[in-house]
Image (cartoon, rainbow, N blue to C red):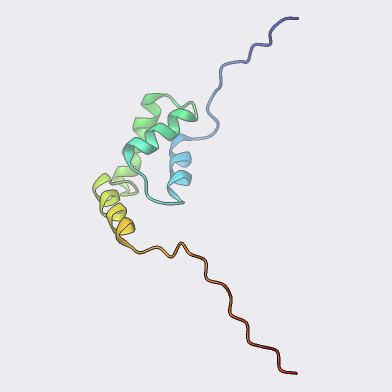
Length: 91
């Protein structure tokens, strides 16, 4: 039986729009955005153009990300789930 060959993957949509959607969840570094867009098969030139637009609009800033990351890491996290207290049922 012949092995099936997949055609080369082409990116779907616009790199800039993909980056904006990626940033919707939380801030990301330029390197994270670059890696994300490469995984979506965008070429380096298209990625660089998208990142330039994001920088111009201040959607991405590695220094601001570092400040955000430090603030997040210093906040206490309530990892323990507290059981719900139920009032006794009056008979």
